[in-house]
Image (cartoon, rainbow over all chains, first blue to last red; front, side, top):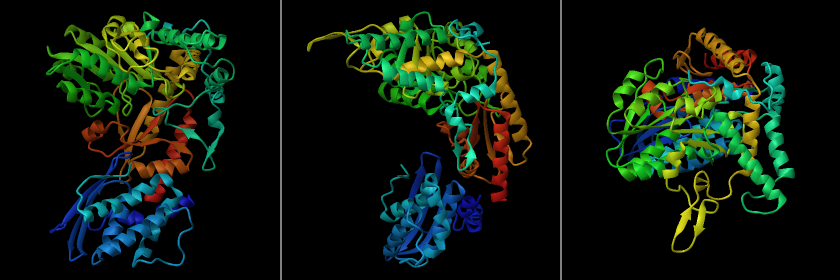
Length: 153
Length: 421
């Protein structure tokens, strides 16, 4: 059960049950729909970007505790961040959850990313890494304004 | 009903009483552990595990009797050809087809359905012709017909289901009309376990002049199938759900239908005479078996059918029914669990959800408890939409499962409750 406790930490269960920023913000400059065809999970990310800065962000979707918590926690920390910051955070987050190296003890290059370290438990569950990264891939597409559906496959 | 008990009384294998511990000893993988726990395998509906008899038959093929078939004049090729055609004759007996030439080897159920959609559908269906499906079809019995619709303008009609997941014969009968050319239905729902009353389905379709294709991927596992008694026009199934290898499956088709169908793929083994001006094609089944087939796969399938036939079908049915009843009772006692698929007479497949916990999370937690289940949409997204759910947890039972396996599933669900509160 210890690895499971590591994966399903209280903060993840809390975000999974009561996701923050759930819903479409009043003003939206970009949105994208993400989908995991293997399990049917879906997420839509909405962003409002002005002068290269994320001024508002929200999401809707249906999925497992990991994907909903990842989306919720992501939206909580991105308001006020520049798009460059977001790209750097994406890269570091991806390394955090998908790497087989030990989790970084020395902290993160990008601001606030330490709040996401609770998601590092997925690295012990290779089948679940995509649940954690789907919202981030979808966010990137929303910022790029490509409008194409993102899938994990 | 849709049964032919005599079929499994195979003269080459004496029927043994059903002893689950003896059965378990035949499956080497069941002695391994997963995450430090003895494996409980409850995903036979996706693919069943293989008994030693199948594994040995495949090894023996490669070690002693392997060569390409239908080509060489040498001893090994003759042996391999004999084994390949012997497997076809075994399948013929297994489903009680009139002739071995009605048995076409495919990669699996999916390819068998695609073969019929492409070849028979392409040749004989046109704009406005109707194909009747049901909402509980696997994607493999939906998408090939959508692809055919793109090419020919056929119309798809969908039989609904009710809260219990039963197959409503009256709604089906109302959908079958003068433009219905084909009814393509699953025999047993891979999600709900619902058994479709195929004999009645066929009678109603034939009364309207429509042909019937049965997706038997699950159906052939849970009951003996007699294609003549059912009077199905096409019956498709896979080896790997029947304790045989993956990559080998079967299309049964009535001789006259297969004879009228154009080739599906072109290549070696399916021709009579090739010139650059004109090629003439071999008769069925060779016409539909272009290229070198999975030779050892057919040998493994033969061994799997012998294995299944070594049990008394009534004893197997009683065993599976006991597991289904026990699992239904224990799951039903959990307040947070909702069962999907409670039609009477269903097969040994249970699908469920738990309040407030996504199936994917349940699957991960059960896996850590050594319990393998399938979670998600089970390649049946229209059915998930019908119930307005993202997915379910599915436990499907096979010959080797026990009540103890059900207990381990329930224990794992207690872990889920402990973590999710």
